[in-house]
Image (tube, rainbow, N blue to C red):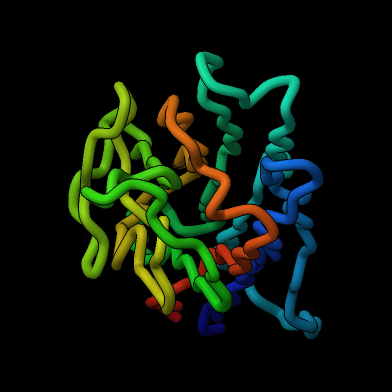
Length: 212
């Protein structure tokens, strides 16, 4: 009797409404809503099962106000852990390899630089499963701003692969954890030009190779 392989892929999408709408002179991020999207799984006689599951720890939420984001105060940030977990059963010790992407789609961005030298004020910082900060993302500039490092998304618009074709491999079970942080940098200057502006996007994890 021949063995059959069943691959179960769960994709999780983070719907990020980074909406910087202000009362008074400052902006805030609304919550990042997380929802699971999984395919229909049909019953089979599979003896080998590969299960790759994406998950996100918590919502990203930043609320800036005159109480916490005035001149001389700290910058604001919020972060979440995004995980990819691969489990192999009945594979008799053979390693299986998959690949996945983490993508940021910025669908709306009305923000502008508030300084004449275009000092970055909205950053995204990505840390890999080994604890190393990602420093290269196509289409985005890696910068330092007021003591913070990350990729400048102050005026960014479009789709950006934060992580491309990243391998996850195991003969049994493994989990990889990425940290994604959004930083609203307090430049200690007048940033009122972005009052009432909006920023919206979607952060998602997706498989590249089903390895079926």
